[in-house]
Image (cartoon, rainbow, N blue to C red; front, side, top):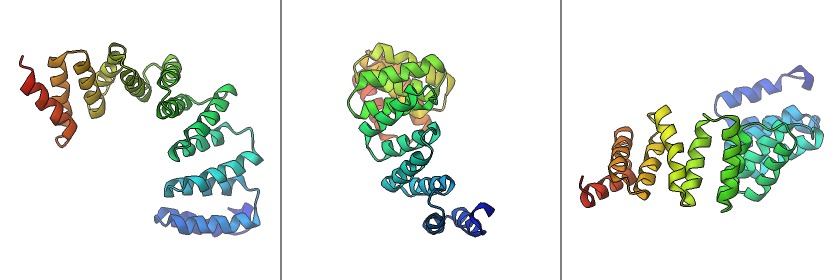
Length: 224
């Protein structure tokens, strides 16, 4: 705190702890006028705007940090995530690709890159990104989950199955994984297995209407 000449930042952090995010932003921005090249202040401001859902202001703050510290992979990563949240998928792809090409990539970079490609309708590139992460971290929950989603979206149901099956084996309470596994079993005409998965979803989430509809559909139209 002393690097800024007073203890006003204590006030800002107190606002954060009390949930008064805008008041905290006001304090940090007031200090930024005095210390315009403070990456500490800019990072705090960016993080708070992210919490507020004001992604454009968040991204602007990260860009200012990058102008001062262009070597910071972590700041690029945070900016890419904010761009994704703002649905600037093409720009986010450029940021995440830059991180990977730098050789300093974080494993989660591949998840965000895959999600961006998925929302851009480029499922094959999405799958490629998830596959790279699975090569690095084969047990990553999110990579298996989104890989399954992307494969299912391209009609590659048999390839999607092992990813969902691994998820429900290792994470018995992952309701969404059970649901997508059930849908994938349906696509491969394994109705008995699908019914069991929808039943598990309803045990975990009794008010899941989609799972209830699928369970009822199988029970009514497919007898075992």
